[in-house]
Length: 141
Image 1: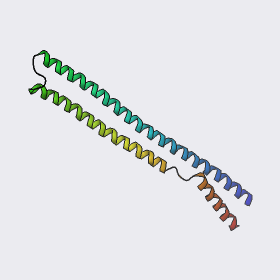
Image 2: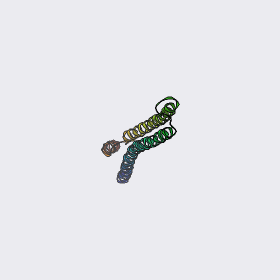
Image 3: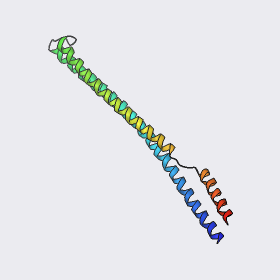
Image 4: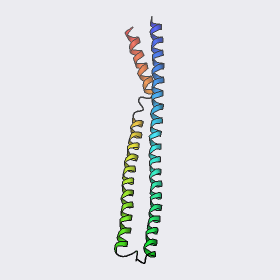
């Protein structure tokens, strides 16, 4: 009967070790995914900023050209106010984009840290626990 119990214990230990290894692997993959999402978010934000600056330059150039063609000095009065409002709109849009991207990156990094913390017990820890359990069981007879 002791042989059957030992075989059962060994099969259980093998199954548990496989489960721990799988959970460890999944946690590492999840961490890598969160880190990649943080990198993608930062890259997307930088690309949106570059696009926004290019659009602002184009609009400002068009406004100056239109004012210049109509004989209005683009650097004084309401023409300057219109351009200042255009810049303010783009600046506000960029601020909100930076804020939201920073929050998403922080959330991804936090999730990555949590994934790392949740790797669970290592196989070594499990092995020592299984040996302790088997020794206690054997001592009971």
